[in-house]
Image (cartoon, rainbow, N blue to C red; front, side):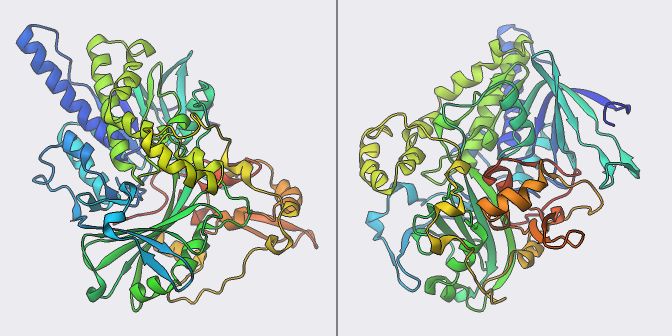
Amino acid sequence: MSQEIERESMEVDVLFVGAGPATLASALRLMQGVEEHNARVEASGGVPIEPPTVLVIEKGAEVGDHMLSGAVMNPKAIRELVPDHEQKGFPIEHKVTKSILRFFLTEKLSVAAPGFATPPQFYKNGYYVSSLNRIAKWLGEQCEAAGVEIYPGFAGDKLLYQGKRVVGVRTGDMGIDRDGNPKPTFQPGMDIFAKVTVLGEGVRGTLSKQLIHDFQLQGMNPQVYETGVKEIWKIDPKKHKPGRVIHGMGWPNYFKPVSGMFMYDLGDDLVSVGYVPMLDAESPFNDPHLALQKFKTHAFMKDLLEGAELVKYGAKTLPVGGLYSQPKLYVDGALLVGDSAGFCNAEYLSGIHMAMKSGMLAADTIVEALAQQDFTTKTLGGYTERYRKSWAYDEHWNVRNFHGSWELGMLFFFLNQPIRMATGGRGLIDPIKFGPGHEHMKKLAQLPEGERKKEEFEFDGKLTFSKEHLVQFSGSAHEPDQPSHLVVADTNLCKTQCAEEYGNPCESFCPAAVYEMVDDTEKPGERKLVIHHENCVHCKTCDIADPYQVITWTPPEGGEGPSYDRM
């Protein structure tokens, strides 16, 4: 159908896909850079750059709607981008004054490391406690004031090529029923042509996946991921401690899979609580949502949340492969930034400042491309050179074997950790190679007999909640009468091979109860997969963790999905 209908088109100089910290910082830095360039050439007699037309498209209904992060933010990048950001109202809830590392040893026992013994990875004093949702909104306002156009409610659906050059993006069609037929409200997607297209869609973005695949940009190692599940609670004011940030590890997952927790105090007596397991677990029943619910039953958390009120819920994947998992960052006509390019310092639990810096480096490259009117790899390749000379690269270099050390086992990790720190990130082996996370998943027959069934857990409805209940707190909304944006290539696989070999892990790893195996009333004795796409919180876990790699996350109609206010 998409090839038979007429589409509107528009042309811009620079197109950004996704309104996250990387792209918004990039768009703002681009406008600053053009001004700086023109001021220089005016003084020296060079040729100025015509004011560029810059457009940001965002799949969320509003800027910030789909933004979720453990937002304890290193202020390094925002200080570079907007030195007077505090005077301009940058949304800081608190500044960190107390960094705590806590070990959860058993269901009741936990201990905090002495302050002097807090490792540098967990020392966040001076960082900003904020909301990524509000950071994105603030950056969007700065961009619009600088002359950037932002179109929320438009999802990038397809890259447009001219030979081996990216020339723009097609937005998704809207108003299609579940059978693929146009409804009376049908609106075809638009073709947006650009001299440079910057992809900053977040983790496992649809267009980013397409670009990396089509141009074979994959790094030495594949990207690997964690899923962070996060809740915001309103707690007893007596227990609220502004400036406090806690990171922890141990119970209930210990290291199967490698997991961590975070907790920090927001304003208005709110606390943000998150649990983050790796997606390279051996068990098909690895369930990030369940891990957080169990964690909240720890004595420390029960005391904190006693009498508290749940306010918000959400989930998001994080790219944690590090430097050796980063793809090539440029092709003719396009650049990758932020999580789409793997800019996350996993060891230091920091990604926002890295994403912003990647966007700023991309923007400086685009300014040069506009000045030279050259949008090929000859000029856009300068992005990588700028990156290699930046503090963002230094950060990645110093933690380059963090995930690889875990891949070689817990004993090796703890043996290698002090050596890595003493050798500038190298450690005993450099580089450490590893494969995709989903390949770690074992078949049921390979597991000990006692681990071949999903763990039973009873949610109390006060402290712990089912996925179905929590989805209501994500604000997620999708039109039911549309094709599912979660595409399973072979649903027969689900009821036969996958059920037998893995016990349908999609029912476990999805934190939003999207996938459900039910009795097939038309075929007694058989089961079938039902996809509740309206529950989806856009975390991309299914696209990543599926052992057969037959699930593909695609953008739903523009404007749909979660609403992560304050997340």
